[in-house]
Image 1 (cartoon, rainbow, N blue to C red):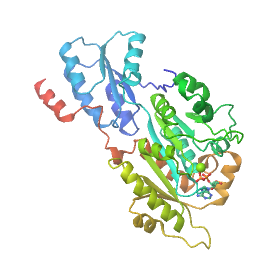
Image 2 (image 1 turned 90 degrees about the horizontal axis):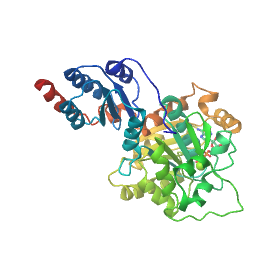
Image 3 (image 1 turned 180 degrees about the vertical axis):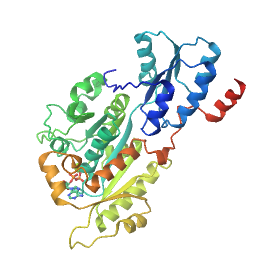
Image 4 (image 1 turned 90 degrees about the vertical axis):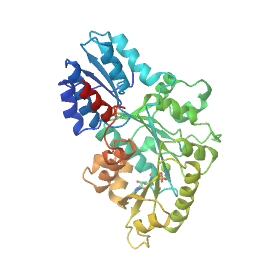
Length: 373
Ligand SMILES: Nc1ncnc2c1ncn2[C@@H]1O[C@H](COP(=O)(O)OP(=O)(O)O)[C@@H](O)[C@H]1O
Ligand SMILES: [Mg+2]
């Protein structure tokens, strides 16, 4: 449970409905209820309407009834326990859900890549991670995959003793515990596998070098941010084929246009059934610079424009020099809103996209059950 971020609220199912009407739901909700059989089911159907997809539900109740148990299970409740229940039993039910061999990884992986170097892909990755940690309150791990030159340490004003290179070189024997020790804390809710930036070593990785690290991170941290450098190697291509979501950052010029088009084309063949990448046009509006209008840029590469961030050398420069996030130095800056928007989309908490409703509970079947009860 070392990575579990736990909050408790009063109010049973009704309280949960109130809370999650306006807040994103976590990976797991454990609910204690003293409702009667028929009430449990009707309340849970209301709760299901306000849950994000991917949220699991564990119910603690007072009614020892096999039929209720089976019905709750068949509607997608992960587990029902009759109180009193020991913490050990609860803990093993939770690990069964999230840590067993056939459990789905709890972490979503999101790759950030730039169509050219130096266009702000890492800056946007780190600030989006910050927004996920501070606005969505989810734990994040940032993997700085630019081993020789990465800036994640600088941007969070950290100089950790260990980083991603240690994880890579330990790869054969790497497990969750070891990885935990190698990670450092960049800020509240933000873990970091920083770049070593040691040029004595050279880094020629094979296609699957990062795979194990990414999967281990996904087993324990809900959001895994991959800060990918602007290179095209076997491992970059392979990583892009396996992640849940991709954010492509561009500057509005011709070279970016060509590169972004090529990236998007290859992604279509690598991930034919996955969600389209999110396109962010960064550094637009540089004085006197001829630029391609963001929307035209997006249209011509047949990709939806997700957001645009204006060039602002004062604010971004200060943040970079101080090792701070944009939200820390200018919380009302327009870019902060963009980072929040990226955060809610990539973390799967964007209610527009996911249409709140889940815990695997199907409303029509609950309705049927209600009529029966
Ligand atoms: N919108 C922006 N306006 C001004 N400067 C920016 C903006 N976005 C990023 N930068 C700056 O651009 C530089 C390169 O950013 P970085 O994130 O390291 O790029 P990349 O990861 O694409 O190589 C940094 O100094 C950063 O502060
Ligand atoms: Mg970078």
